[in-house]
Image 1 (cartoon, rainbow, N blue to C red):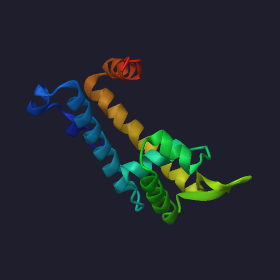
Image 2 (tube, helix red, strand yellow; image 1 turned 30 degrees about the horizontal axis):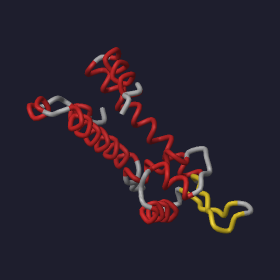
Image 3 (cartoon, rainbow, N blue to C red; image 1 turned 135 degrees about the vertical axis):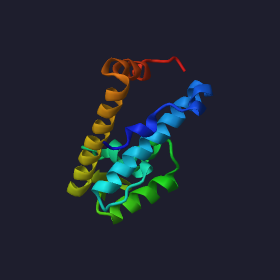
Image 4 (cartoon, one colour; image 1 turned 180 degrees about the horizontal axis):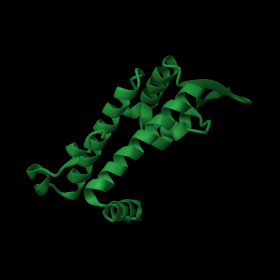
Length: 150
């Protein structure tokens, strides 16, 4: 088990609105996934770095497109990419026929880390399904995937 018991409803959660409930559950789930990763690997990867890695997995986007798609500042994107490169998880390359743009891609180590992290998240999802029921989890995922019109 990787910590699903920390997602158990508490009295504090009972009085929260939807936005705050989503936030609390997101923070708790991310923390559990991060701790599970930390037990498995010596490579420390922040949530922001995981997000960037997920967006570039099996792709070679430009740094500018990553910045735009993740809605983070250019400076923050460069900082995270520099950190990922220092850890040997990404490579930065020039874009062909373009001196301005750079593209990034995961290294073999980066891909391995991403894939291992996905397995850990699937294990957490399975534990959540065990707690709330597979059908309830499916309903929750369907609701979250639906167009909310906002």
